[in-house]
Image (cartoon, rainbow over all chains, first blue to last red; front, side):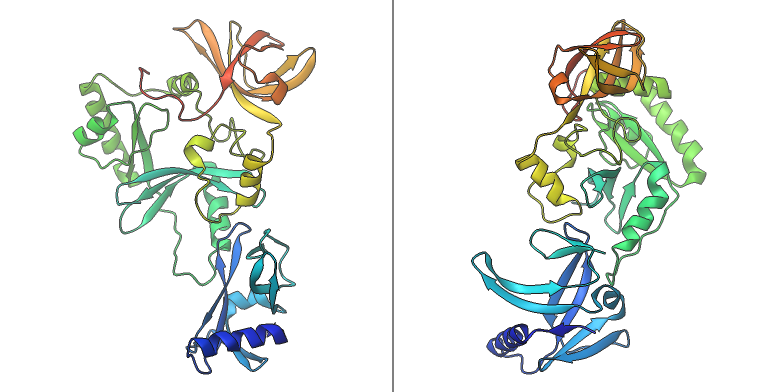
Length: 107
Length: 263
């Protein structure tokens, strides 16, 4: 399964409320591309198919397709803020390496 | 890209090393890649790995690729009644034509006839190699491959953009460009002797590189070659020793540096 940290969950809800999206879930997926080969993609969505698995974490529904799940199993999504910026950070045990900014990984 | 466009590109691994060079052909309804034959199966597997849930299908078309090179290549393909993509493989202008294998003989004959009509003709591999070496144009499998970065193979000008978004291997390529120094360079070499690919190149009795391609130029009366040398041996005018005699570095090999002129 995949999960959100408390901070990430709070941030998701904050953004969701600011955009008037009610209780929409979060699509978490892997796409090909990026400087290490794969990239993470996050967006609000409630549409699911039979190819999806849904998890609940910190009060947020997380939807993941079966292909992306191969690369995301055990991932924890955190939210970090620092001098270099703020954003969601993926702690992924399946990643062999990541690029400098953390947005792309190899598996 | 617009339909009919073609771009030369490299496929890199995560370390920035070259897996293959490709021509990307925009066909409008689909995009084609022409790749070195020996890399096709491996490339398909490589690309397949990165298709997750995207609506992308990758198939081998099995088409034959015919190439016309020279400043009048466009006239030749038009004269043959064939659609050509602008693929300049030697620095003089060129067109690549893709046809089903069953039509290859017919297309080949039509292109030869059209080329002869403008004073050209079919060339063999030896002539192609000579033209390539006169241009100093590196070739995949001979002058660069999975152990080389784009910059050291002289491909930066025609195959690398430092203004585009993330691609596999980008971090290494960009870091090399902005902060690093290449430890070796592909250089153009000339010799009065019959030097051949595989020969070691020596400076002050130390091996500093190796010849990767070589061909005798009958018009110049010299052997033209490409080879990798260490940075300290890459300056134009450097004299290097080989088992077959001396040779001279003429400059860095850089695909695309030759424009115009006669083949």
